[in-house]
Length: 467
Length: 173
Image (tube, rainbow over all chains, first blue to last red; front, side, top):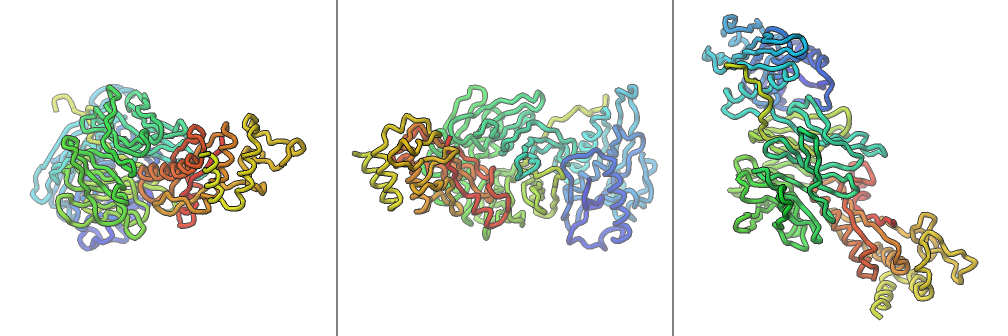
């Protein structure tokens, strides 16, 4: 299932001598172990291929946890893969560990220093209660700072077997925050469109949600007509998208718990580009009901529409909210070419944000409200770029392939996911905003496109009683 | 009078080929009531040229199918002179058969963002719609829909495929 993946991150430019083990034999042994692990996992649509990591990642070892593997999930391996995927960590494969401690007494820091590790995670799973059918597991884990020779974080989780992967992502989040100071986004999800049998008479479109690592895929809606423009509500319980299920574009809001779908915009002409307001009460969208594509805001409770732009001869589309909800970013070709603008919703003041190049579209602001991510055309190729909108600095390219689109930002602002083409397939790519880590998420089942990274999610309650 | 002027203008745009159509319009006002798919039987009519093929798509005066796909340059929604001549013949037909309706689909190539392409596809469809209605076709006969880049004609990913995918299609309902 995992093609070309390795347990240890393999950056293109990283010097081998900085790692504890030389490449070659050690690397191939690790690869075999990783594939064996992958074979045991259930088949999922998305695979992960890490193509580039940081030059000097934090070196960590997540030791296989002691005790049973709930639901057959190797929780330590899932958490380890999460950390490696960020590009900020290089994780050691268990076959290269000198010992496999599961409790603090068994940890010899000297061993881990010898392996060049900065951090170490150990854990132990035990059966807390229940019979085989409704067993509840407890997991105690500890993060050690190897150089300082002391504990850096610890936790106790309680969960049923079905939530084993949630537990793994929760541990990865905890470790990530303890080491980097930034909240981890491993417990988030991605929404995307899987296109099966593309370019055939049997083409079908599958709106799909999966964990951020591509596992536990779940189909939300299926259609023989195109689906696009996926978006999450801020609380993570609803999604919005554009569907051609009626033969024309309609905007649908779907509840993830009940699966209930509601067509919230079905006007004459285009119904497109839905995005939830930061308070979740409104949807900004692009409609051509009044003749040409303009930006509107619809109140979801009342259905009231507020028109935001008025440019009868221009395309105004792809709205997105500033993090504070006070302005809308959007694409407009009112100046002759598509460029990104911002409109202050209180003062109605409009300013153009992009000036370099003839095609800049689908802007999204990072959580800092200052860095703008967008699709940028350069020499007839379409890349994802970002720029600081408070300076005149030129855009910084994050991708180098030619047909990159639909960037979506992780809620911690550290990575973005986008759609591109690779080997004749539509695949998802993810890049750290600093450009140092890259991975692709292809599917063997068809083209994948239109990704939307979820906000931080409340997730299932994994707190152990008294923990 | 206005209608006649439009015919003359359309004829001027369409060139010599169009004159036959313009004359037919004048001599065949009763055809409007006929179901469109039933071509008049050659024996009964003085001018035996059928106006549509077996699928109900209009033919040019020489009996060849009229082009129904119109191609565009990158980022553009401008119709070529040649397309305008073909559209003038469609306009003639639609004026004569005001019970016929068309859907104009706007499409784009895969480059650029999907939502901008949705709007660009609509702009292309509207360019065709505007031409038809300005040539005297009733607005109620023409509707537009944009599929953006979602329904390519050519599944390829090169210049040739892209050129085939930047199009508007006229579909007789």
